Structures are given as C-alpha cells and as structure tokens.
Image (cartoon, rainbow, N blue to C red; front, side, top):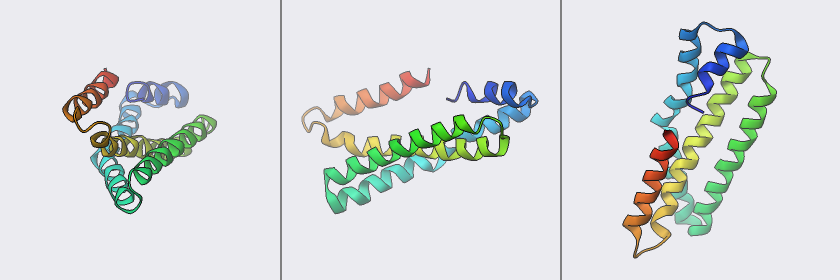
Length: 128
C-alpha cells in the first residue's frame, strides 16, 4: 500500500505530486502509534481472556482492515472520504501488526527466537 497510494492520488484525483505524496505519507505515519495500540489491545484482552482474547483482537483488527479497504475502494470519487478511509484502514493494518507481535511469543516456547525472527523478516520482506 505504501508504494501505490501516492500514484493513486496522483492519477485518480489529479493532485500535484507533492500533495499526493503528502497525503500518501499519512498511511505510513500511522505506524507512530497504531502498532502500539494493537499490541496494547492484544495484551489487555490476553490478560482478560488468555490466548483467545489475543486472537480475537487480531481477528477484529484484520476484519475492520478489510471493511475499510472495501469502503475506500467504493469512495473512489471523493478525495476527503478516500483520505479518511485510508487513515482508518492504515490504523487497522498497523494495529493488526502490533496484535500479531502479541501472539508470536505463544507460538512455540522452544523456538521463540526463530518464530520472532521469521515474523520480523517477513515484515521486512513485505516492505520490499
């Protein structure tokens, strides 16, 4: 998403490239806090409901992520609606990443380092 949102704003709405880039950067800026929110939610519900709570948080954030993605696709004629929905979508994406990190330590006790490394490497691979 990071590499396609700026050209989308440029092509779809005819924005100057600098404005399209500024609006596109909002997607990545949600990383400043939304990933932590996902981890905090995972920890909170994990404390209350155990692993089931952590998985429900992960499921909910990913479900809302899909809903906002669909709504953003439907709002292709309105720039303000697209930007607001993109920010909501991004918050769900980053929160789901944080919630995923909340589940990793419970995948395997013996191979915790390997599981953590694979999740970290997967995130870096996805960014390329």
